[in-house]
Image 1 (cartoon, rainbow, N blue to C red):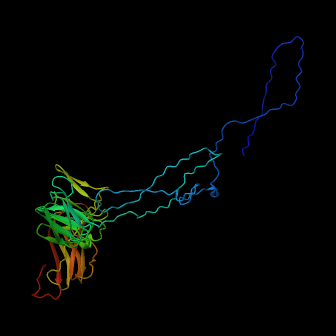
Image 2 (image 1 turned 135 degrees about the vertical axis):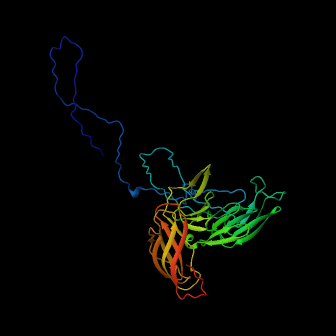
Image 3 (image 1 turned 90 degrees about the vertical axis):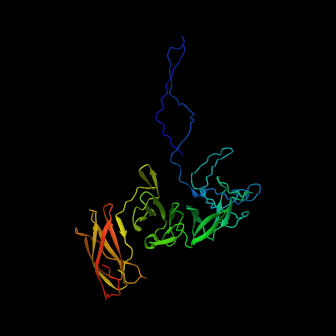
Length: 408
């Protein structure tokens, strides 16, 4: 209901014509009757709140007005053609467009609310073939055609159940196939390929291997870094650092002989020349070279952490207990460097760490430590290219005898 307040209505009268008889006009004020009507449109930007009792629900499983059941169901038909490998079907967002047809009723309300649907995928008519996750396929020579014909050049074969194949990288006269459950070396023999499993531990993930035609590196499922050549496979270790990486992304800086191992939050750099590992940038995913410039690939701003590196395990040639007094260091760097000792008495337990100590201007760090074996950890808060020219560990071996190898 709408109430309209009408203001004062004013009327004007006019008499037109002439007459010799009429000399005086008297107009009497009597009642005047009017009939009023309103024509136009009505608009309100404040509709009534939604009344759930007036909601309408449509059951797609119900019968229509002709008695036909299940007429409202939505059905989709999919067909795959060709030779199927491993397929993953992900149900994304389904978009629907609605429109109203027919004669308009007295009023209608359209609300832009969520439409709820229940979907079920039927497995009827689906044929599942044997999984070929560990199979290797090769194409015709010169073009990407894997169809086997009378030339018998293209083909396929299984590879020792190495799981999902992550990558295939050439190594001299063979190729290395990296799988989730093992590593296989494949060599060509006439028109076929001869496989040989060289490592029974698979790769950590899809991007956990990289290499050139002479050298390969990869991180296995346990976080160990491996070096693979045509003749040998070397386990470099470092699992205590690389195993916490959820995903290992390997990038090779060929110009500086550096291997970057990153996971977006943790990063390490392995020096191929010096055979050492240190902490590095965590979000590098590749390198490119343009004339003399080296370009780094990353999906976000590079995070440069403090320089840090750790030595291998030392026991000074004997498994007897020992006490370290101080560490002397000679280097050309001018920035402050800190050191701590990772130590343990039993090789079956994890390393414990001493506090960080800064080297004096004379290059000495006083850091007493009692242990059986140890590692030295170094770090710098400012970036600088440094080389350790000389490192001396001063201490004493308890119960030392001439049968021990004395190292100072």
